[in-house]
Length: 215
Ligand SMILES: [Fe+2]
Image 1 (tube, rainbow, N blue to C red):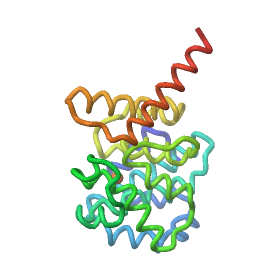
Image 2: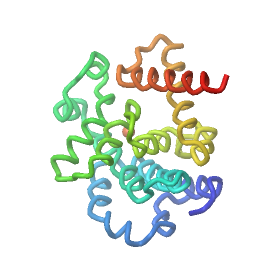
Image 3: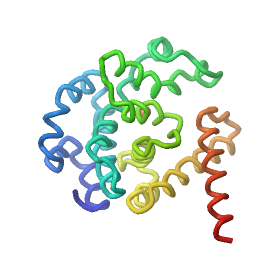
C-alpha cells in the first residue's frame, strides 16, 4: 500500500480506483457485497464508503491486523446509513432516548441487523459495523480500525492528525477520536450516546491506569 500521505491524496482524487492497490482476490471475493452496498447508498456516500474501506485496510496493515477483514468491514459499515428513520428503528429498535429522537444513531446496529438478515456471518466484522456509530467495544481491534477510519477518512476534511496517528498508534488515535467527540458534544450541551459514554469511561480508566504504572 502507498504511504499515509499518498493514500490520502489518492482517496480524495479517485476513491473508485482503489481496487488497483488491493489484492485482486479481495475485490473479486467482495464483488457481490460491493454491488449491494452501491445499491443501498447514495453515490456520494459510496465514495465515503470506499475511502473508509481503503483507509481501514491500510491502518490494519500498519498495525499488524487482518487488513482484508478491515477492508470488508469498511465496505459494509454504512450499509444502513441512507435508510429512513422508520426503517432504521424497525431494524434496530431504540435502546435509549437518543436513539428514539435521532434515528441515525442506530444506523450501525441497523446495518448489523440487515447484514445478518442477508446471511453475513463474520462476527467481528458485524461488531465493527455495529460499533462504528457509537464507539468500539473492548476486545475487537477491527472495531477500532473502522471507527478511526470513519472519522478520519480524508473526504471529511477533518481529523488528519487522528488518521496519521492511527498508522503508528491505533489506541492513541482512538482515544483522541473518542475524547474529542465527547468534549465537543458536552461543550455544546448535547447529550452523549450512552454507548459512547461507556467507551469514553473505559478509555479514561485504562489511560489513567497506564499512566499510574509509569509515574
Ligand atoms: Fe456510518
